[in-house]
Image (cartoon, rainbow, N blue to C red):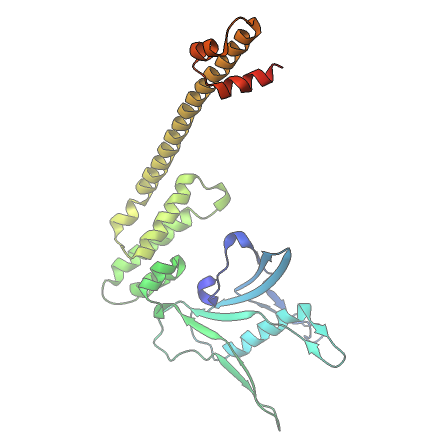
Length: 294
């Protein structure tokens, strides 16, 4: 979403909600149920200075061109806007989402129609437009830098449609989707290795180092990464325990020395010089201990 809308949202600073994608025409004729489904409608709320700022994003995915697309997008936007319409004395205020249409497939036809012009007799034309995004126009380097894993899969699919190495790319694509799908069916219940397997699969696609051997070894590489992570964590805990024990022993010795000094002071027959000599402390520390027993 940051890429599509040139935004800079941080996961820790926002709440993202998938909106109800059923757009019902509230002005449909009686006895007619007019419902449309958008592909993805997202509500993003930013949190700062105890205030909430809400953004609505509408992303539509198209596998082919549709001359009616601008009309459909305006219809989706207006029907969404009707949910929170407001009125003034002589105006109606309706806000529509920020909209994009994404074309994932490599198409040979002309660019999509993404502008709707509404003619008004005796008045200026009304223009409604939005941006169309073609995945195949996004460079491989941009996909890698922005970590656009889903777009990488679409580009791999486009390669599978070409005559050169078509069967190889098709197998790679099927393997990539299967690896990711196997590990993404229920994210909440995933094991650490399954999560790592999914990440490894996406990285293989994003980096472009695509060969069947890489996909076949994803599980093995994920297990190695997880094992290394656990080993490093265990070593860190062991080192922390060792440091803790050493610090504990040092603190114990210091406390024992304090108790010995207190007993010497209570005897009352030893001079300060003798106590400092026997216990290896300085005058400042001795004076501090004296204060504690007054």
